[in-house]
Length: 201
Image 1 (cartoon, rainbow, N blue to C red):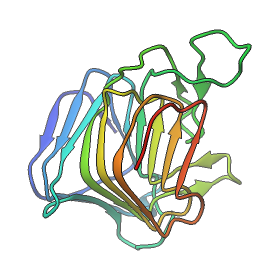
Image 2: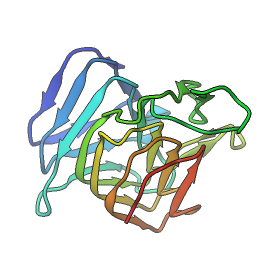
Image 3: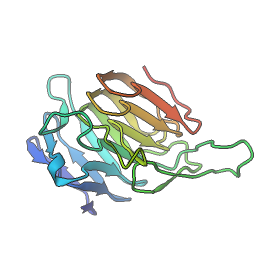
């Protein structure tokens, strides 16, 4: 369900069930070394950060935060999905700022004029067995999906492991990332569209 008040999960083992949404104005913090597990028998599972919400994960090299799925089958859940209001460019003739509708099945609008959008901080985070593609490609998820995420967001030392779609996808926005690893994903290791303006290594 929806997370509507600031919440911190201390180091531990947790279960994610369903589409969990961090609402606008709310910060969700998960402490280093934690493991978050979902199970595809519960249906669609994903962690969604809506525009205006923040996800803070300060993992470390020796204590990363791991999101995984019980069956260990690629494509078993929706991964981490973050929304912002940084710019997108779909058409040279369209008005500025432009918007689009997400392809993750949530049908949320993304795009705007806030280049410095801040969706939080993801450091030493691993997403496993995500990248769900269902309904004849009408709904697609990746390991990490960044919709119009801005340059105020910190993305460092992230791993997308054995997903069934893209490891990382940037839908416009201005976010940059350092030290990304995409391993064993079935579609693109790294993908971007909608005029993404950032740098990755």
